[in-house]
Amino acid sequence: MTTTTNRLAAPRAGDPAPAFIARSPSNAAYHFHAAAGRYTVLCFAGSAADPRTQSAVATALTRDDLFDDDHAALFVVSNDPADETERRLANRIPGLRIFWDFDLRVAKTYGVVAQDAQPGSGALEFYRFWLVMDPTLRVIAQVPFRADGSDAQEVMQLVEGLPPPARFAGIELQAPVLYLPRVFEPELCRGLIDLYETHGGVESGFMREEGGRTVGATDPSHKRRKDYDITDRALISTLQARIQRRIVPEIAKVHQFQVTRMERYIVACYAAEEGGHFAAHRDNTTAGTAHRRFAVSINLNDDFDGGEVSFPEYGPRGFKAPAGGAVVFSCSLLHQVSRVTRGRRYAFLPFLYDESAAKLREENAGLVGASGSRYRAG
Image 1 (cartoon, helix red, strand yellow):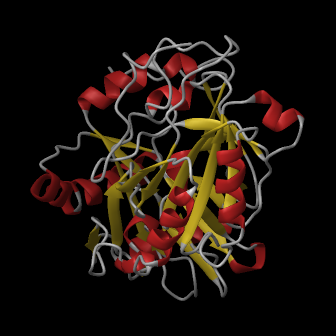
Image 2 (cartoon, one colour):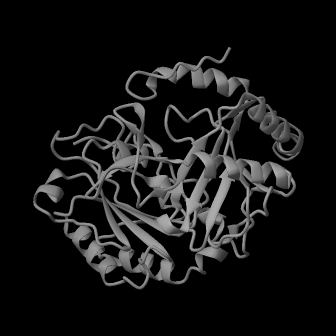
Image 3 (cartoon, one colour):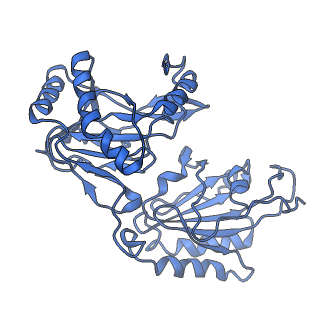
């Protein structure tokens, strides 16, 4: 039996939950950080063959009033391949999802097993527990499994007694974003919209990691948007000048970060007739996007409904900047764009970074796409 002398300490109240990617029955690479925005419970179950695990899951299944993906979501982490092959555990959406952690990577990260534990090596010593987290994925409580099964009931009562997710901190929080009107003049906004309407846009996807490489993907249920790439050098210089004069100083003042680089010159269109939206995501989670530091969302019009940018970790409030106005935020923040229900939302959506990030982008250029990017920081 593997000892626990080199087992990491499990996260405690106040700690941020370590990020991880794991396989689930419906997603080959589920990014746990995307679960933010509601209370989240991790149940480190070991194996569903264990009677304590069976009791814990059975108790949770009776509380679909709690685990509804709005108030809370439950994730059960299994380390036993038989749980999958014998179908002992399964997703129940909304509210309950399974992580298959047969290589023990998540278990080691969270202190469930020793760092030298080997999959399939026989009996392993597991520290089984529940981890209750707030919408920012910071730990509220760690509850160990108990022989009498009272741990499950304690977790249910704890989650039941929590305030609405939007007031998890005791007050309604303001997302840490900059909200800046008057970045683009009306005539510049109109000109960019005219470009899109003249040339049209191409369906844009999103970046994800596959086999260590950053590749493009499309999924209409996750994102629906069309983009037009701006190539006119004079217009690009005009856009850079506006960002340099009207956004860069604010980032320096608030975040003490000096922007020197800008990526992507597009006019994006979220159209109601196409169900335009973008589900919750972060902008820097792959090797090819890790250099991104700040995202800028400049509305070019405001005669539409829906299409608001929101930040689930900090509540449901949506931000709709006026035409020419910007919402600026860290690329690490979980954010989403609600479905446009009337009209079209046109926006200019660049990313900003600095010289050290430019070097990182160059280092990772070979990991972008099938053949790599030609980006050079110089």
